[in-house]
Image (cartoon, rainbow, N blue to C red):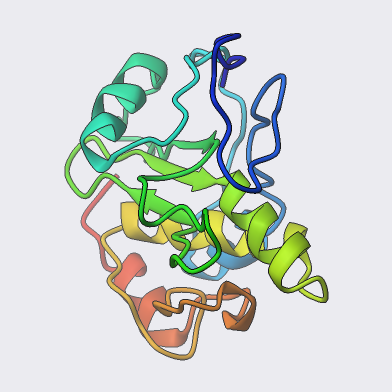
Length: 187
């Protein structure tokens, strides 16, 4: 994602950035390989310089995804899309630490786009819960949001758990989620 405009007004404990990094995808292969899915990264078709959105709303997510995702699914493969975003909507961005912090979002209709809210994860792991591993939380969030792109709902006991404490999610998909992916009638 691109750099914020120079007139951006930062709130509360927001950490000003020059650019929003791509989210860490370090758990995708281990999580999806048991479902017979092998992630391939950086297909070269997507826009790597997405526009900066300070507090992206769910309504902005679809246009943000469509402006930057160019790889489409075919009969030979699925195409999942995940992008790092600064933070989600006001009221769910963990600013003023009394709010809940949503760590990611998936546009729930075709074509799907997943977003990981990196500032929310930084707030949760660095300021409120310094013992949480921010890299692990970010990786689990990526797997969780990509799971939604495969049509998975929230499921207790695995990475698809809907938890307000993302550090409690496991790093893997449970047998029920793996089975649900294995029977999808595509590619």
